[in-house]
Image (tube, rainbow, N blue to C red; front, top):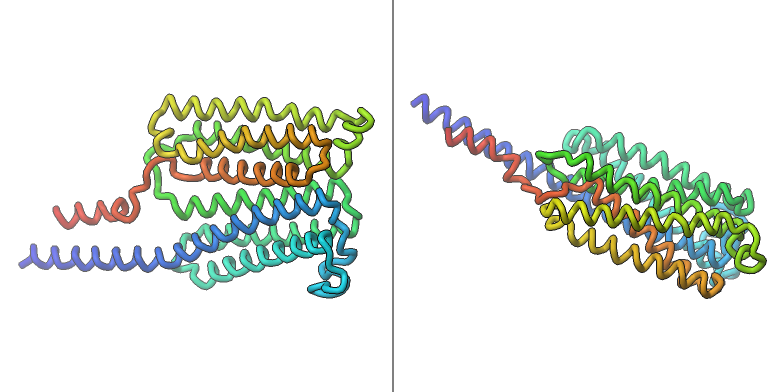
Length: 324
């Protein structure tokens, strides 16, 4: 009788655990989906911002946050005004999306991990800072340092959002693989630095001055020079994954994408210079590639490098308890 009672208690506890896991997973699934939308919106925001800069449309709307005093300036609409207006609209939607996730994390705080509301509050702060930099770019008439800071915050938002998504996806790994994360962090840091130099290059017209007058070439040469350590660090990552074959097996799609983006990024950079920066499509593609490159590196840093065991893994101790 005692045995049947203990077994019944364990079965009830097991059913309660399953229900609790499924109940929480419903909320986490919502955050994961919203997080994926945020990543896409942030990449679009960075690329549209690059297109706005390349097309010299940064001051197409002379006021902020409205454009010509209205939310939708039909009477002044042209390509440049559309780019600047759409860039602001995307930024507004990203802000609303992050605010919505923060609000949900407060409402559901008892059903989600404790770190999630705190992390979304950080994201919300970064959005406010990003909006402030957006206003300053107009007020300061596209000051180079302000434009560079604007891009920095956008990349921080992208990296933070991806890290949150991966932490929601991951189960605890048996091996932390700190060396793997450090190896991936090197090209991420180098790519961020190269991107900042690229913004500095375009916002000060140094590239045009260098190509036309052969002056002020230091920034352009530094930007090109960073391609070598980035390429070398990516090759080191591939070599390490091949050496530890399980890493290659579980992450080959991401690693293949890195190789493709690396070579296409170099090709787009060369084409941009060969055309004397007169083809916006190459420069915009260069910015898109950099954003995707950073997104994939961040994903590899924060994701579980091995196959996740999912819900069954978390329930195994309970099953053993029942069997015993």
